[in-house]
Image 1 (cartoon, rainbow, N blue to C red):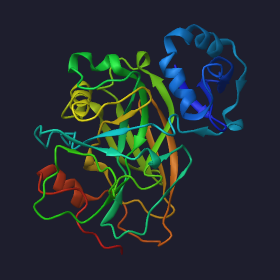
Image 2 (cartoon, rainbow, N blue to C red):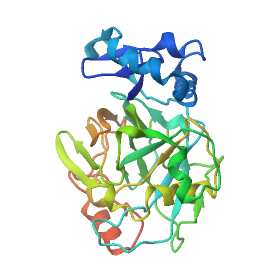
Image 3 (cartoon, rainbow, N blue to C red):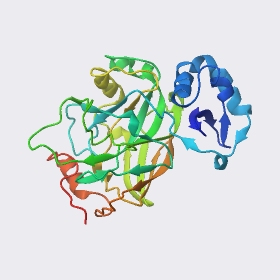
Length: 315
């Protein structure tokens, strides 16, 4: 089942024909927006039969008549895995690390990422499979990890690459509470278009992820390239942070297709069996970097010689 929010937070089901409004099912549970989707997630088994019936027999609104929004616009936590791919086998499995991304960074489909004026080396797009949690947990055993998963969605971890502190390796976990986070500027977490329930994704470790900029393909990798599996990642993240229903976990990206984000770009993410959406980029400073894949970052990550995004002055 493909669940979404549309037209000012109304819950719906995406079908081949369009959107079915399920506010009459979810509405009695709670109001709209984030709370509506959380209510849908936590009460899913009790209302599943009604949802299935609505999806088959309910009146359909054409997609052209609705505005699809981020399926979880205000999660309490966005948990993220860092350095979680082998880069097509070039990197050996490394110790796990991760970080929190501000929920204020969420952006819905067809929205606009606004680059801040900060003196960043470069702004990167990171296409990622995102886990939607269905129930609360902490200190999760990997064998039990999928019992906490409700479904999956698409996300882009927009990253401002700031000059690193020389010789400082990433810590095991970066909470970034109350301090500047180069991944948490407003609009830096594009998300959507739907939540696909986990029963429709039999193997989330075998999904093709693609990202294009102005119709030029950049990222193209499979989730099988994860250095640490989804259950291992959930166990690691939950050893540092608790989570609840409606929270998110970005699973990481393959860095071989990263490139600069700049003013006027149209960016599209697509994940096999999950969905696709686009967003635009605005930079009031009109900075420009080289187009295409950031080959310097790709090389650095393959060789393990540095953090992503060495100093690149706008051209």
